[in-house]
Length: 403
Length: 152
Image (cartoon, rainbow over all chains, first blue to last red; front, side, top):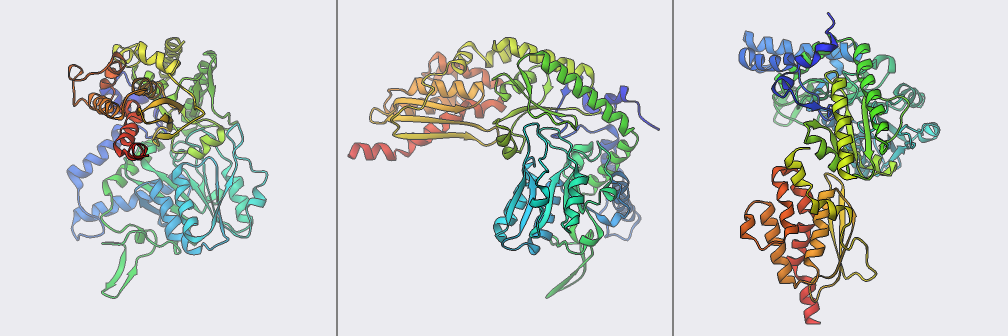
């Protein structure tokens, strides 16, 4: 059954508690549907037990549900083996696991890691730090003024000392949808593994991890209608055995002696300590919710809202989008004349319109685009044309106030 | 437009952000105070040309929202020509007024200062108002430069 887009706001309890809210900050975190909130509450109310531990029905059930979510995840991202899926705290932790638990031991002085200039700090700092620790260098794919990757020198940038490529699928600032398949193909010609940051795309855009042949994929549940504090690391089979855990503790082990520990295989070796079981179950419910939607329809809907917003922004006269990517998701960064982004966001907040202002955890990108900060709107399935209309009306009022 | 927002962006604040006081880098700078908010990227430098009569020849430059720009402009205008002791007392009063430790009737503050009372409805903007003031207070409290100057 496909849920009708028209009535989607009613699936998200926050909008019945705050009917006046215009929420245009889904790129920061999405709102949660009732079914996700319910799944988490149900777990705590009716099914709470630890996983992989107890020999009683409740624990067995919890284990089955927790483990079952790996199957839900592979169905969402086009993978085939549930053992490729590790649960983490979020995309940031997933990247740190790859950086410190896999890459660092393969990285030597003179090696390099290739990222792009449009990465979120979480897909930049972990690589920068392991490079610093090992004497490797961080190479950067530049971004043009439209906010697109400049790939003409990619083949030279990928060289025999490149140990990993890490790029985002969709820019959290500019909305650019990157040609990840092309980058992966180019890197694989030289046997270089590729990590894709899917924080802004998974759950919203089709992901075909097997077809792309990506080696690592990271994302967070909370940006795709799931709970906070839960994320995923997908790791292709051939790299799974090469990832060491960053956390050690209860769980994750085959055998422990005072002088030695034998660890479980990936992904369980990464999941030491009591897992965020309710979070993982919430992620499963979020995937169920997403799969009841028609993704062609939802991307068309958010795309139409973006177009409608851009028409309004242009009609203001002093509105300017930062970047102008040809292939763009439903994230738009903009400026209104010389009015500081915080004053724009603060003004809109006065009309219950939630937008983001600042550098969006991507300072190097903004620097390369020549702006210190932007206002950002990001559209999701629950947004409507009325939301866009109110936002543009707010911007018209703002312009009047500052003229 | 809501009343609380109108109060936040009062005429005084709008005016100071549109035409800030001493908004330039002077030729002679004795001390530079850097006020930077890494969360939002706002960045001002306050230049002190002379510090015998504390903050003589006070200027500033940089980038920030209307609130942080106006508050830095008012800092420059207010502290200009004050002794270090007076300046420190004013910084302290302003910080305590914004942080609601002192009411408007307990402080010897000008209308320029009181214009920021609107921020009390917007706790997320406290950092904008206080950005340069906190750094100026730290500078004044450190006292290192003043002592050296006096001894010389």
